Length: 473
Image (cartoon, rainbow, N blue to C red; front, side):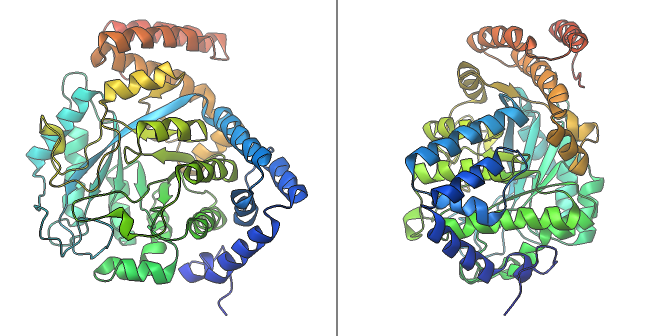
């Protein structure tokens, strides 16, 4: 029998099938053990996190009062570490050429219905200008796996182009990268190119299901894919983002595997994932989500988010426009700290006046503009943040986590959020959004702890109104 070892660099040992099976059995046996549930919740209140077994007990718990306690604690922990800020970003699809046969993705190599497209550098530039004109400062670039059409050199050229575009007051200040698992050497190249977070979804941690869902192409190799984050960190990338595609396999198995992956990164590298994403299988070109029989209810989806938040309190959580506005509103309260807005999941989609559907990776469920999303967040009491300061000031990896764990990150993030929001209001917001935003900023200045920082922020806000840009703590 393969032994579970979170410090191992072998996928089958740090994501150990037998350990997950035993974890789920333990959770089933104890889901109504309210004494144990109380002990786990008390441990979670210390803000030091939970292991995969403890968190799995909470996820399995059926007691309504305890579930409410879990939700309330998740909301409070989110406020403690991330305040009421929500970081904004957008995906940028570079190419849908792909050699893999993934059964849940319309980019799979056998799909003859979808037009194949790859952006030229001029088209990348035009997409970036369109995104800047919306107000975005942070992108996550996406591309299919194709060594001929999308080699690492193409990705690096795109990153260089993105950072070079300065249109009016616009600038993309952080480029996160979501591309296929690759080599240590290529991760070093991405690091040198100045990327923010390297993001790679596991899709499913269940190896047998993984190999079935990825029948052909390099992605079929479960171990190579699962061990990618270790190679990325070996290549010098500080911040990595993980996630599963909920709906492909049993959600409780995925939940345990996801937390075991986070524990592994902490055990080996001294720092867990920078972000955890929560996507669900959605309809796309030739993909029907009902073909997968592991869908989960909206209620359970929210419960998963709450349990992740209290299990890994320092990790950012991402929800995309895959979800409806209604679900996004519910789940943000339970721990999400980053959302996309105004997203288009097609190659070249931002330059089109009407949203193109022929090259979309998935159907977008929240079709609001970025201005509408910002307006909605502020009305709900959140601060939409376009801040990228930590990345640009070198507060990444263990340096970010140490600041987050100590609560010191608030002294940077809150003022930076207000200043970047002011930039958005001045340059891109509708009159109504601007009016709401100015009132919110004035109110939130009072929540800055230090008087000298308040004075600096007030001064900088006035300078932003006069046309200056890019202040940061």
